[in-house]
Image (cartoon, rainbow, N blue to C red; front, side, top):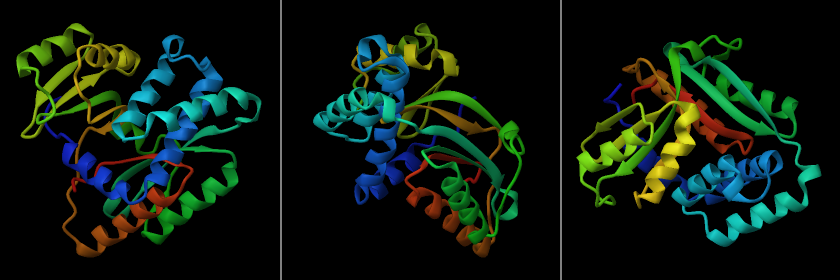
Length: 242
């Protein structure tokens, strides 16, 4: 399953988010709160929290902000009432979209997500209507410029740790794992001193769809932008080949 690295996409998102770090930090802050509630405040005994901390660092979240988030969540464990919700639907030209959210008000989130689809000339579907077109995988992206390890050594380190696949792109390496092995593989790479541009469990499309109609591109971008601006939305997955 090699090939379509989303590293350029990740760099684009990071640049875009530099102007709106508040959104990124809100998203990660909620993930920290849920991870602490589920497994406690000690990363050594909470692999989910370790993964969220790694994600926070990849997004340039300061250590003191991470520590404050953990302490706040540990002190307010009873008041953390975020729920994971997921929505599936179609954008213009049948582009498949999955939206993961973490919310304290499901009615508000559902209305906002539905509005984002509608404004982009798309529509919400039923659970499972598009998720079958994606594979849930752990995905680790490594920037070639940041990584000093030889490609073969990096590949062996990843595969020995339990990775399913390793591919080399023009500007990056991509490591794919089973979701259940993700934490272990990510930790092994971190222990080996490998810098990660992105490390998360994600939904990878089985096929990518190109859009040639300018109006469809404009409408799809409108939906994605509206979802990106919503603090409840944690992640958006789609099969548009941008």
